[in-house]
Length: 260
Image 1: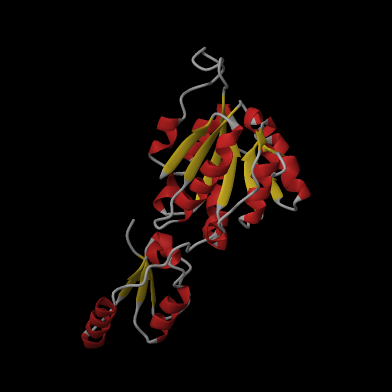
Image 2: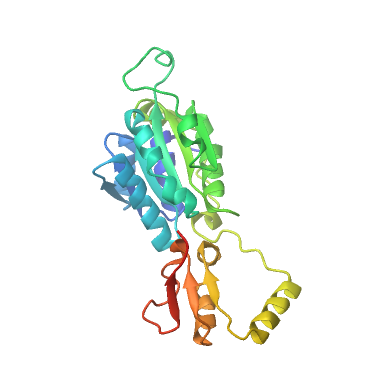
């Protein structure tokens, strides 16, 4: 029989096993989990605001390829959602954790308590409410799957309890289980049709003035080396804002950013 773990211990161990090295939060949220993360060597970064925590998680995800974690209590859930717009548009693998009032406090005009699902509908590809700790294992794994692909985008889990404490103090009676492929990008990298690759190569070879325009698709696919190899042939390379960093801006053949 599996050892029962508190929700806080299960969540912390799962984040660690997924390869998360830093989490970003606005006090007060998941305090028991933060203590467990300290024991596991995961750095906890206190932000100046909820949006700041979301921005840092987005930057962490883009720079490392790992899943960025940001969190805020119920009162700050709307502010945290507002900070996820760039992460959504850039297809960053970010997961946001929030808390919400437990029954019977719901629908009783509690302080700054509003429904969270609508706030996250436009800035995540997956959002779920956890009303009982027993839901944590399956929904946490689902959040990581959704955040990392095939088209990465932020996910959101809304824990019962103003700071998620009801979920944290509950028990999980199954062992921690993670799918490590969903701890970073690209979780999936589909191979293109060989005929399409050949056709594209012929078009490049026969073009009089070929120009490459690179975007987040190359980032998500982990194709930075291939992009640089293309640039080494002398083809001028431009990039969308979400593709910045794939090529050296100091190269003579780099055209810079295009689009808006």
